[in-house]
Amino acid sequence: MIERIYSLLGLARRAGKITSGESQVEAMLKKGKGNLLILAEDAPGTHKKYTQWAGDLHIPVLVFGEKQELGKAIGLSQRSTVLVMDQGFAKAILKVRS
View 1: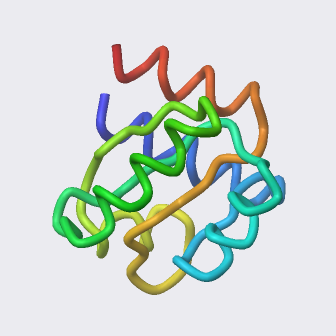
View 2: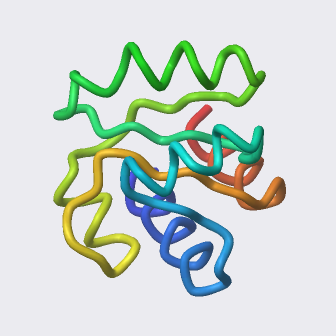
């Protein structure tokens, strides 16, 4: 299950369907965009702020994985926040998670 989610994140990144990193995710949330927000389990400082923000925008939030693993899955350095922009990828990730 975990590897499948990381695989889907990697595919979404290659397709240009995710935004990652706090500043880029914030910019997209300010525009009201996004379909799934993923927060790293080992970045508790981001949870309250982003969970509330995503809730206001009716974007599902998934607290999943560690910063290092999230970054590795999308081919970048460690990331505490990943915003899935594509509805299809978001649904696929949520389906795997449930």
